[in-house]
Image 1 (tube, rainbow, N blue to C red):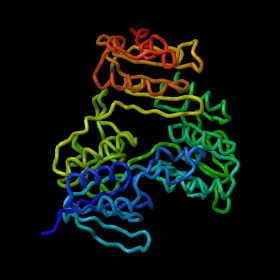
Image 2 (tube, rainbow, N blue to C red; image 1 turned 180 degrees about the horizontal axis):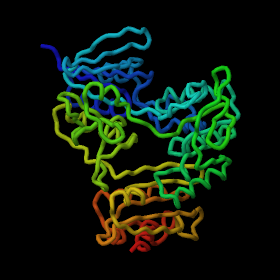
Image 3 (cartoon, rainbow, N blue to C red; image 1 turned 90 degrees about the vertical axis):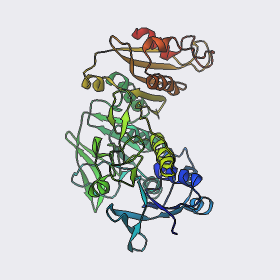
Length: 448
């Protein structure tokens, strides 16, 4: 009697979380993972710190290698193998060995699609030029690291002012490059409201990043196949190196071709157990859709935290258990130059789109008691529904000790708390950690 076979497409956060969970629950299941890059189970979030020199060795970003999965978990993790098609009717996938070019079919009983997301780049002239990089895999980060070491670029242009773009701008400044950043909108970090995003813009300018806001990239100039400049609707910026930070798009084309339904931003539609609408096929991670617990609508977000949780839920269900993923509240955090930047819930434009009436309050205070050494500024913005007082969102920009306060707000959003209930929380206090009134509660009092 043959063993039941699980095939996982994608060997990073969601895929390997699921595969490892299935193995822990089922020692007999045959598990095959196909991953098109050379690495499994790595920290994509650490790539800017590797390029910036804060992380010295690539291996430190790898949690478990393919050899570890094979030897210790009995998971057949095959890197440099790309799945090109899924045939639900025959329950087979079409695989190509990227090292040899060989193509073959592999049968499955259950299939998990965890294909992640890819950096977005519009179809612009010169986009295929050497020296233009999108960052989504560890291998892509290694390529940028090698380019810095071997080609010694002097001028870099970052296109896009989201998390990866800003973190990479800082990383390249640390490596001694002249860095320009082009952002189509009027501010960087568009997941923040403009008043909070302007604080991040100023922190970038302080470390030497030249910002070109409200400009759109129209193409790339190349010479001999290499990028030489980024062209916007207002100027031409010389560049030896270009980083695309325009966000990511879910890798869902193969799923769509197999007849799976897509949802928000083209992500694969799944239920709370990570099941697709096709029997025997599941999806998790950056390729899949989720649910926003504040807006109460389908949502798409590409974050390692979400991918790991969805992978664990899929793994429990694939192993015969029962688990659901309840959704997200939109929490994210980053370090941009001297500032810690965090957000959760909804921002003003999202609340307006829902047709809700809301109130907002922004305060500036200190991360610690003002008389304690190391106290720095912290800006907190809260948004709440008028009438009910339900907390809808929060944003924080500040010095060391600011960012993790967003977790208090994320917890409050998850619990559906009101602003008054946030004020009433019994939060900790000691001068090295907080003023007597924690900044999130000071903002809540102001909002009331």
